[in-house]
Each structure stands twice: as structure tokens, then as C-alpha cells.
Length: 205
Image (cartoon, rainbow, N blue to C red; front, side, top):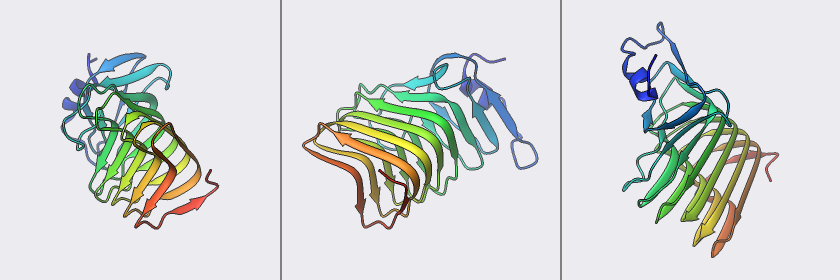
């Protein structure tokens, strides 16, 4: 019924615990920045069929998709193609408990930072069956900064220049179960970096 995901989100004004919604996104490429809403799930037709894409930002406080409390994004691909200082595919901030399920998140082309997923400032995002990819300068496949996400069946790869991290935990109590993380091609490469962090890791490569 709508030509963009944002228009569909804007049409919903009574979302709460008693009024929950699902936006179904048919196969195709959607070039837009999407900010999710509480109690509104967004579902694509599969990671190879539905793609949300956007260009880079001058601030790290943005993403192609920004998560929200009490919401789930699933069955699609999110990418950021850069062309600016920072390329970030998925961004969560604050006490967000957004869920991401069967998602591919890819970021590349940023001149300073490229992050598949950035969790910041108390985020408790839940990532299940997620692939996160970052390529280019300042790569972090997943960045957990002062946050405590739950990651289950997650595969992360980062390839670039300078300091390259598969997963970068800073002041983080991330919970990681069956996670594979790799970093290549940088001046320094770290699969999982734990800086002042206390993560829980089970079945991690």
C-alpha cells in the first residue's frame, strides 16, 4: 500500500502494547533511511530478495536502519554504501531492546569508519542468525560500545585498513553464543577485542 517503508511507518500512529503492527516489505531495493517504531515489526521476503540501502553519514549516530524498543527487523539485507565519513548499516542507541533476526548487515565506503552494526549507550539489542560485514577504513563488523547485546548464531567479518575488528566490545557485557568473527587486511587485526569489557562467550570462534 506504500512506495517506501518510511511512509508505511508514518501511517501508524497508535502503536503500543495493545496495537502491534507488521510491515511486510516485498522483494526489491529500497533506498531510504529507516527509523523503526516500538511495537512495529518489519519483515522482508528474505535476505536475497529484500534490501534496504542508504549512503554514509557525517556522524556515527546514524544508520541505514535505526532500531527501536519492542520491535523486530527480520528476513532482509541492510547496507550502507558510504561516500561520506561513516558508513553504518544498523544502529541502536540507548536502552533499545530491538530484535534482528535473519539479517545481513553490510557497510563499506566510509572514509573513517565502516560498521555493519553499531550498538551504543546501553543498547541490549538481540541478534539471531545475523551476518555482519564491514569493509574499508576503521572497520568493525559489530561495535558494542557501553552496551549489552545478545548475539546467537552470528557471523562477522571485517576487512580493511588500519585497526580492523570483527567484534569490538568496549565497556560491554555482550552475550555471545555460537559466534564466528574474523578480521583481515588491516594494519592490526582483531577477531574479538574486549576493552574494559566482561562478555560471556560460548561456542565462539
